[in-house]
Length: 311
Length: 267
Image (tube, rainbow over all chains, first blue to last red):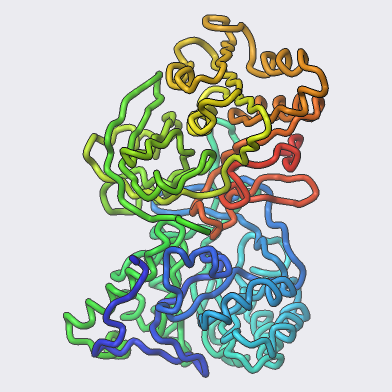
C-alpha cells in the first residue's frame, strides 16, 4: 500500500515529545482535514504518523454554515464550514473507540462559545482513554460567537487556556490565529497561562466574489484561506513565535510536501500539521514523512533538533 | 468501505461529443471493477506536479467497460479545471480517486424510469447498462438536438428511449418532466407502484421530477452535485440542505439521494 512509511527504524531519529505527549514522528494531521480518522484510513496508515488532530468538537452538535462552503483560489482554498461536528458526547461514544482500538495517537480539537464551555469540554473529555492531548481552537474565522474572539485578545486567550489546563491532565496545545496584529503577544499570553505548546497558523480570513452572479461565493461571505498560498505567511509567523516563547511550536499552514515540512522544522517548529494537502491527496502525509526521512539520511541529519536554524 | 483507490489512470481517448462536452475514457482497472452506477471519481485536472489548480474535480462515472478495464467520464467545460482536462491527450496519465460515494439503489422488482436532462445523463448510462435486458424507460432531454448526449449509446441498452428537446428539434417538444408526467399519468395507481425513478440534471428539473414522483407516490432517487474539495468526507465542504436532518454531504451521503430527503425549497 502507498500509505506506508518505509525505514521508520532507520538511523534517523524522528521522535518528538510535546510535554507528556510522545510522538513517533513530527507529522500530524490537522483538524478539519482528516475527519475523525476512519474517513482517511483507506489511504493512510495512521499509525505511521505522529498524531491525528480530529475535527473540532463542541459541547453540542453543530450543523455548520449554509453552502456554498468552499471556493478554490490560486494555490489555495477558502472554506467556511462553520465547525460542523457531532458534538462531544457522540464523539466519545461513536468516534473515539475506533481511534482507541487502533492505538492511534489522538489529539482532540475543542471549540466553545465561552470560557465555561471550553472548560466543560476539557472536563467531559478527561478520563476517556485514547485521548493523548487537547488542541484549543481559539482561531476559527468561520463562526460568529467564540472561536476567533478568544484568539485575538491576549487576555481572553490566556483565560481560556488557564481554564482548560486546570480541567485536564492532558497536554494542552493552543491553536493560534494569524488574523491578529501581534501573534507573539497571544503566544506569550497562552504560554504564561500554562499551555504545553502552541500550533499555528489557523486559516487567514479571506473572501471571493462571483462576478457573473455579482455576489460573494461563500454562503458565509468570509472564509478561511488555506493551502500552499499561505505557506510563506505561516512560515514567517512560526519563525517569529519560535523566537518569543519557550514552549514547543507546531507549524501549520500550506504544508504539502516534505520540502515545506523541512522549512518549518528548520524555522524551529518541533512538529508540523498537514491540512489542505490531505484533501488534495490523502496519501500526502505519508509522503511527507518519507521525504523528511530521506532528506535527513542523505544530508546526515540524525535528529530533528539538528535541523533547526539557531539564529 | 470496500475498494476506494488513489491511482494513476492512462487516457485511452478523449473526444468532443457535443459543443464543449467531452467523453473521456480512462484505463482504471480497480475503479472499473468496483464501481456501481451513480458513484463518482475525483480527477486532478492537470498532469504536472504543482498546486494550481489545487483541487481535484468530481465527475460521475458515465460508463464502465469491465473487460477493457475502462471507465468513461462525460463532462462539460465549465471552468478552468474542466478546460485543462479537455486538453489532455491520449496516453497521458491522470490522478484519479474512486469509486466514491453512494450510487443508485436498484430494485429488481420494480420498473426503472431514468430521467436525464442536459449533462445529467452522465451517471445514467452506467445505470442503463446494468439494467440492460430488463424492462425500463429512459427519458433524455436537452435544449436542442445538438446538445442531446449519447442517444445512440442509450438506445443500444434496449430500454425504451423517449426524447424531449425544448425547441422541438428532436423528439417531443418540451421538458423531460412533461414526458414523465404523461408517462406516470397514463398508469393506474397499481402499476405506478411498480415504478422507480432515477434522475440527474439541473436543480429546477430535479425539483420538478421529485415533485411529480411525490404526487404520483413513486419512489425517486436523484444524483446531486456540489463543490467538493476532498470527495471522501474529510472537509465537510459539499453540504446540501436536507429536511429535518440539517445538512447532508454529497460526497459521502450521496451523490445519489432519496428525493424525499432533500429540502427542494432551500437547495
